[in-house]
Image (cartoon, rainbow, N blue to C red; front, side, top):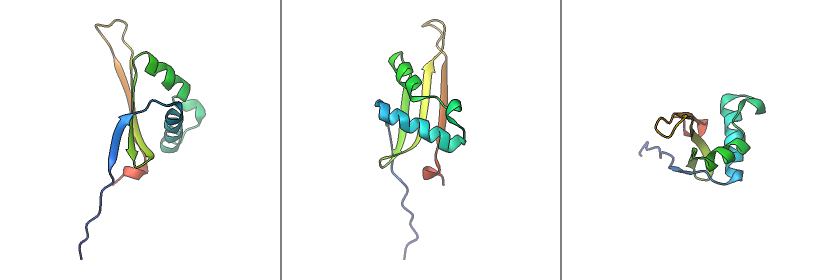
Length: 94
């Protein structure tokens, strides 16, 4: 008998829909243990994507297991600054 443990298949993809951004809000609250005032709200994610932010989700099947969010914060096009935020839920912990 084999003791092989199957690893989860994680799919990385863009988060584009407002409903997916609401999942990012929920994941932030769950993972960081904070209230609504301490998370990046879905409305801010929608607005910042419109001006060049990136928002990628790590999905384990249909469940959001983690995300990365980065937005341009530089004063000119020649000197952009990217801020990122990455957390993963216990779904993908080893």
